[in-house]
Image (cartoon, rainbow, N blue to C red; front, side, top):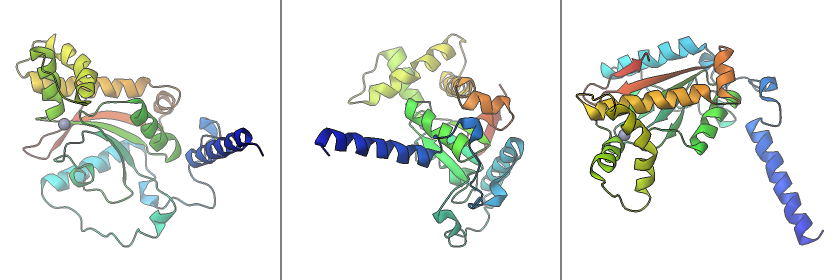
Length: 242
Ligand SMILES: [Zn+2]
């Protein structure tokens, strides 16, 4: 085999492997939740979108009360070796103070978490969340913003004071600028919090409108997409209604 053919063959093979991995070799509507021979490793995670949100918030209530369930890292280790079926996906800020597994008192294998400073969608993060929803059958996506977000403060400073940030950091402030501008138009008394909320709302809407996977799953009742604000002072997550 010549070198070109060999490379083409390798690429095809890799693509086939990826499609197999992602389950995307099948039409999205035809993708099985789990192959018949592979039962969901966590059957308790096969729940409705509403039940998933309720479970998430009950976990947050335990976290707020500082009364988490006892951790058991060993019992699920074998089951999670060959698969995962998280009951919720979270688009969270990278902030070290926001740890979704902690703040929702969730165990390994429960949450599919995509993180970026400023908790906003990028193409790669959208792909990750599509994978969580369509392949792993996660019934819920929460976009989780938080109070006192450094990325949001930087984006405000870039917009209001023309502050320059070194390296690639300005990519984040540029990407968050639409949320800053939208919030500023409303003349809020607390601009930082208003931008946090605006940013969550915009990304919830972007996810709900996203084709070809997420919008369809929402319309079919297989997926719920909500926004949440984590309050650093209390640990409580407020579910946004708008
Ligand atoms: Zn943040």
